[in-house]
Length: 220
Image (cartoon, rainbow, N blue to C red):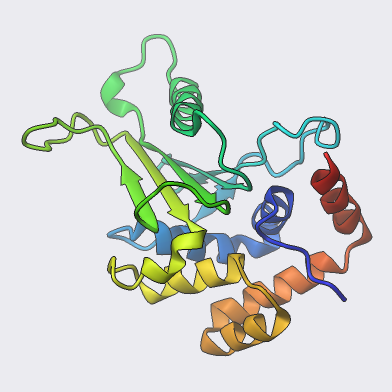
């Protein structure tokens, strides 16, 4: 059985939006965000695939998650490096953030919105894990904590250790960009979470509907 490629955005969504894989999603978010308190609950708000998936290569296949307390985290796999990517990410963040505001709401009650992008294609980035916030250019004080965009450049995984990234995030990056089943087997022996991730990918890869959708997405 040939395993589906988690670097394909539709496979990424099918894998992490699946309710039975909530523990894997929680582990992935924890590895990226390093929250001061454990993530107690994740709720995927958009588990369904869009209907125009087959005909529109530009359709977003993100996983929108609400954490306990109301914070939104939007996670996506981006297969290619497109022009204007920074503006695209900010526009998407702005739509999510503004959607939380209702007439008469107190701005101080708005919860942060975090975007996480796993970039599978090579880019001009200098870091494996780049984090963007809104800060004053001289003293670097934060304007607000409601915006954060994390970009994980998978082709630069080898830099992760020197950047001080944790072992769990490095394992997740290895899982997402695995090259063969031997590498995946080795990874599964390192961590129970990775063993669960391997098993989940195997189950997904056996589903005829997932195989068909992945093929349609590759050809779109």
